Image 1 (cartoon, one colour):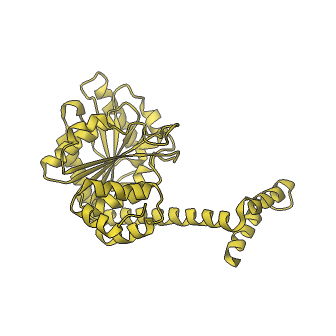
Image 2 (cartoon, one colour):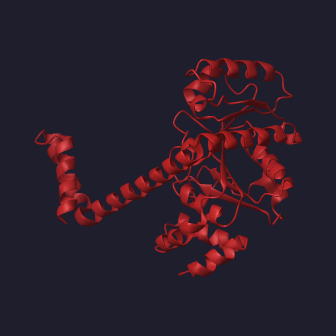
Image 3 (cartoon, rainbow, N blue to C red):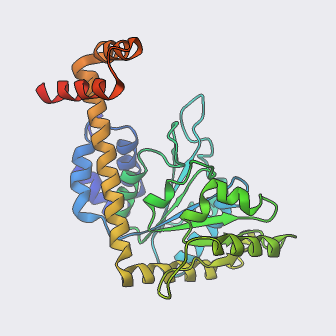
Length: 319
């Protein structure tokens, strides 16, 4: 069904959640109107602060996100939550789409919560997340919290999509070596040890401090990721997390890093769109037959894979 994109954008700017939902649905469904949507949103985006939250399953990401939303709302900020969940193998939708732990914000007009399914996309984020972030940004949100699926050894893409990345840990959820293997020591700007009222919290903080100390040397003006203790279920330590986030944002703006991160994010998004378009064009021009013929020559030893790729690309430029 064709949507009136200018009207949807105008309504989204007014804070109407239904219009925002329809725009994100156009993004998720790769609608033919997607180009029109992005063109309309381009001059309106670029103002929101994007906070990424990730961590192993069970550390309390949804509870922490909900507490963080409450803190920003007390400060008068409009907040959006983009909760990226694993896909249902049956429907393809988000498994945790009801966002039970954030139900307290359901009636707040200053909060917009949207679940997105990864639909098999690796990296912890849905493929449409960058465009969805742009929709929420253009809709006038001050802060966008992106909560990703549980981080693993290849699921650290949130670092490239957020202005500030928050990594959650909890006592008893694995040692520092496991954290290093997962790659989270490289992506975190702020570290949060949640469930800090449990036994082992002090050991987790010490271990994390030690592991961060083993990283690359930092100069006097470099950012050293802080470690904040929280008990998100009771709202304890959340104000300290917000303070750490604001300090990191101010540091990035002072050193010109925030603009650089956003440029890199846009470059990655453009590259992804371009690669997807090339794949579609290859399929449209040659179908599977052209690719299969080249693959057969590679298997037979008549052609190396680089030469085969060159032939494929040459076919695109000649078309």
